[in-house]
Structure formats: C-alpha cells, structure tokens
Image 1 (tube, rainbow, N blue to C red):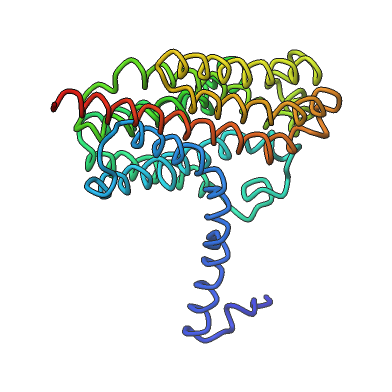
Image 2 (image 1 turned 180 degrees about the vertical axis):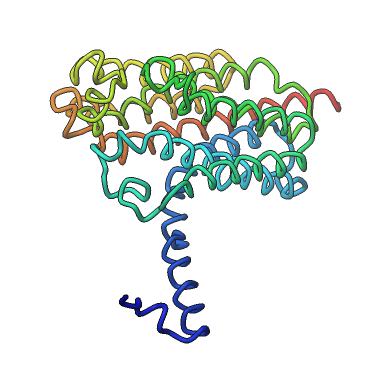
Length: 323
C-alpha cells in the first residue's frame, strides 16, 4: 500500500503541515476588515456626532463620551451589521458580487457568521459603558440589523421596510443617541427628534441608491428592492423624493425656529444636489453611484448645519435661563 507524503514526514514536519492547513482555513485579517466594511461606518458615526453637537453640551468636556459613541456606532454596531448582512446575503452576492469575502471563499466555512455574532456581543458589551440610553439604543440597532438580514424576518426582502430599518438605525437612532448621551440620558427634545426623523426619511432614499447595482441578483433571489418593485426609473424618482422633501422641510423648520442662515445653508446644499439628481433620473442604473459619491456628502453636510443650528438654540436658551 502506498504511503502518503505526509505520513512519511517526521512528526515536526507533519505538525507544521497541519498548522499551515489550519491557517489556510482561517481568513486573513484584511479579509475580515473587508467583511466589516470600514467605508460604511461613516454615516452612523456622522449622525452620532450631529446629535452630540445638537445637544448644546461642551464637546471638549465630554470628549470621552463622544469617543465611546463614535466607536460604538461605527467600528462596532455598523461593522456587525455589515457582517450579518454579508452572511445572510451570501447567495445573492454570489450572483451580484462574487468577489466579496464569503462567496469568493476567502472567508471559509462559518467564519462569517462567527464574526457577525462576536461583533454583535462586543457591541452590546461596549454599550454598557454608555449608560442605559446608550445600551438600549445599541440593542435596538442590533435588533434592526439582524431583522434586516436574517430570516424569518428579513426586512431586506421588501425595499420599503428594509430601507426604513437601515435609515432609522444609521441616521435617526444614532443622532438621538448622541444627543441623549451628551445630555446625561435625558430625552433629546422635540427639535432633535423632528430633525432625526426627517433625516431618517432622507436616508431611506440614500439606501435605495445602493440597490441599483444589485437588481439582477435581487430579482433572481426574490429580494423585492425598490428598483425591482418599481423599475429603475420609478425607484430613482422615489429615491429623489425621499431625499429632497425632508431637506426642504428641515429648511422650513429652521427658519421657523429663527435660524434663517442655517435654513438658507440647508436649502443651498439641497439645490446643489439638483443637477446630480437630474442626471440620475435620466440614467438611474449608471448614475446611482455618482449621486452616492457627490450628492450624499451634500445631504449629510446639511445634517451638520442643522445640528449647529440646534446647538445655537440650546446655548441661547441656556444663556437666557441663566440670566
């Protein structure tokens, strides 16, 4: 009977061969980083920062809370949601984006699920450092992320519900958490709630922009994204509507709250998005990423302008209250 080369190797060589084989079954660190998608961490971190600014509290005096929140919303909660989504979307990604870590085989076995679970638990553990509000907000965001991707709920299967869950988690919930944490757990107040919800509606449209590149795989795998439900041009019109109307309402509210310069700035940023959206409406599939790259930064800049407006209101009210 023939003897395999491994059996002929001496014990130290066999042990090294086994170790090398085990390493090949583990993903590389750069593959793990690719799964966690650092480029996607910006929106919730930005929204949290907007909420912190809107609170009117001193940033320098509360830099520790700000840092804790930025780490929680981006590298932890958002990263865990990306891992969860990639694991439960691996069959769709095999059609749309086969180069991703899981369908490409660079993330072997059940490593993707293991990382998703580990990052979820780490997020919840980190959130305990931010008090009851921070932990509750983190738990809700985690529930939305798993509900978005995982069966039997899998909100992603319907673009209306799935995009709403992501938008609320990434923008509104992160904003309100930033405000509440900076206020020591107090309720953020009606002005912050109004703006957080309006920008969440706008983010629904932003989420739709990401669905155009996956239309073919979504259609074949039964994922009813808005481009699949409404067609490319119908979904483009809906995305623009979701993005533009909330910005107009925010500008009106800021003017009503005696913040005319902030209102004008938000309106100007919205107007600058107009030409990009006009091109997008003519060529939705080809121009969706173009709007994401150049239009969305204008949208989120308006968020920060609005936050500074609320900060000015809070500081003015504090000054009047003290005097």
